[in-house]
Amino acid sequence: MSVEDIIAELDKIVALSAPFKAKLRDLLFSEVYQSHQIIDAPGNHHHRLWLVGSGIVRSYYFDSQGKEITQAFYLGTDLIFFWEAYLAQRTDYYLEALRTVKLHSLRYTDLDGLRSFPEMDILLRYFILQQRRSELFRNRLLLQTAEQRYRQFRLAHPVVFRELSLRLIASYLNMTRENLSRLIGKDL
Image (tube, rainbow, N blue to C red):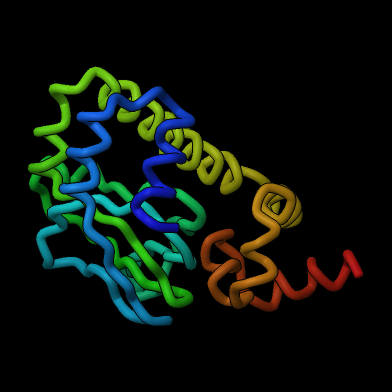
């Protein structure tokens, strides 16, 4: 997706004024990352948000035992946004391109400058709600049995199962790769 495609998608959420679109065109910049490239890491000051133009990104962290935990997958026109970073606090998340990824970024300082446009508040509410839904979905998944987690996630995100390794999906679902393989085998 190009910047124009992103603007067209945002225009479907709320009617964007011509001045807002022009400002957004000036502020959004495109970045391309190769497969398995780290986009951002703990210790860096996350100073921007990203809209996924193409490809798949994951956020992950290491638990106290050093185990890699996948927190989220981002694809399509998903927004990658960390509250901690927006509030100038340190985050513990890594962002990794899982395929060649095209991202459109916006600095947090520029985001604040867009707040003078009324459509920005509507877009912010929309993206906050989307992020909250995603967090609730994962939190609810983790309260279920392994089989329920697998089935619900596969139903909600079939593209992830087609595109990504079982290791990454198992990490997201808080199970072993072997357990996930066994559950997939039961469906065949």
